[in-house]
Image: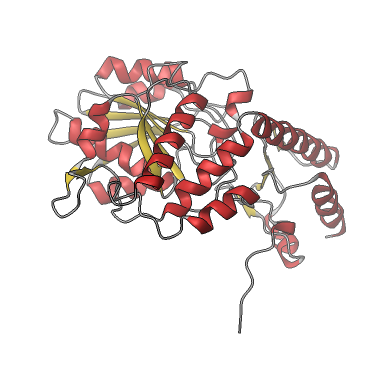
Length: 349
């Protein structure tokens, strides 16, 4: 039986979305190219260099180093790996807020690095004082999040970078989801705002590139050098990416999406998504639900789990936070009409 891909008409909790048409076509054309072998596939390698430059422009870094990864998990793992490899300590640790993405737990497990999770404040953001209490001379990496996956919060990146500098650690910002909306806000989160060393930013989320297309950026070449391994049977001499063979689809798709949408299209995505999030937050609050104020296009509300399950029975693709709140991410495919229909079904169930 032939299967059809997911229809996005009732998808409300995913951080993936429908690719831009130009990105879809570019991905098809470069499907068999391998940016992991840049001398054999120079065309896609040049596209990757241009993607990294554009991501640097978006994040306030004039001379970025990096590559197109498979996604935020790989990029976050690479940040931990680079910090471990550069650390003076034989037993390095990573300090992150408890709101950090679960990929950091994977990275700590794979790389055998201690992960210390600091309590967040009442505002659901990282608490620099709590991070400082856990950081010490063995800390290799301090993590902040620019757009948490559960509540859309932006950590105080400059303060966390201060902690990192105090203990001699690298500073990493996970902007996998938020990086494509934060350029249109007044929040401090990027390389220009603070002495950030490494960043994750994913074109395949708000960037409307096809999956997989993550972004790994570094301020200094030494971070890439710390990841590089020799590649003796390839024409290129070394490779810093985690995976070897990589599909050119992600690179070409990201390049096409960025060319089509940066900056005006992404600004429109953000403004529409933020307006939809605020509309939904008001609609839920007016029905008596406690709602977490949406500072980015993500809404969390204390809708009972049984109600969430009933909405799933109606075909809505929704998921709860770790604490059980209903979570809706206003991605580019989410329209006001979808949200009105969702609220009508919420009332009915």
